[in-house]
Image (cartoon, rainbow, N blue to C red; front, side, top):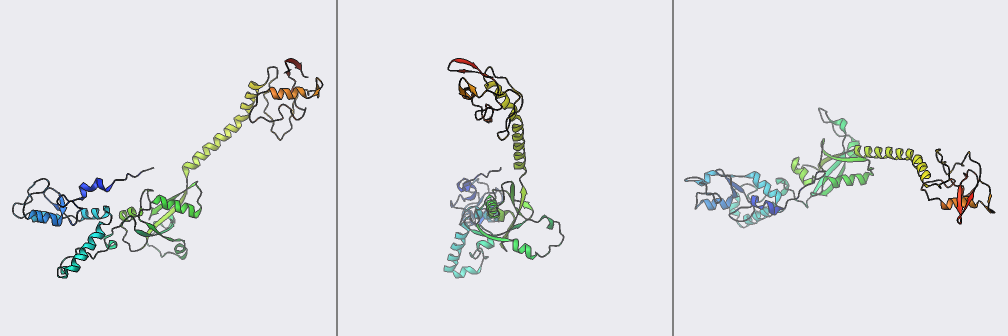
Length: 338
């Protein structure tokens, strides 16, 4: 199973922070000669007095260094998505600034004035609540040229949830399993369209990977399939138990031979079941040995080592039928029964 590696934001700070101000990139701008990036305001002020890169001292331009810098939107989006709350705080500062300076608000875009919400920028935080829909994956609907309108049954079978953006697909699978009482012999797969999702994906990862536009609930699907691995293991275990049960009588007879007294004859027949009366071709023991009824049989049963899973009718402790003649020792004296 794939395991995610958690990386602290402090390990990425050297790639996300401006060396001029010591903060995270705001309006990231890159020098095209050496590809070093800085905040836009920081590098513009720096190049007013210098024509060289602050990091590698490469000449940006001989006379007009501002011509060789470019805005880096991709890097800025990465910074906003990795640093929690940075975009929201920056937009708030810009709105507060232009509220105090309304004259300067006429120029610039909505993002420059701080009028862009997180939803429009597609910035998602871990503690944000995401609305999603979950429905059963119907494979028969794949490959259709024209999408038909969903039927009433399909609409009724769709469920809507509100979950934190940090919730993983594994949590959603466990929720579906417990909600629908799916046995462990079946596996649940969560899908986006027709593509299965990894267990370590969070809802935020899914929204970023599949470019969810927030124009509706995040559409997810699920399907239930037999767990082939578990079925193979259980089948192998069942075969092992069957073979063990078949070899059980043979092992019991072998142990009987090893644990029986010295003078007792051995038999190769299978042991009778506890519910079946014992039948033996040997003559029966007399009911009176040395004046004590069935004393020899009781002594033989006490002297013999215990054998697990052996029927109690073997030595005839309860009845005298089916016993075998044997030589036993009572109080040091040899007594022959039979």
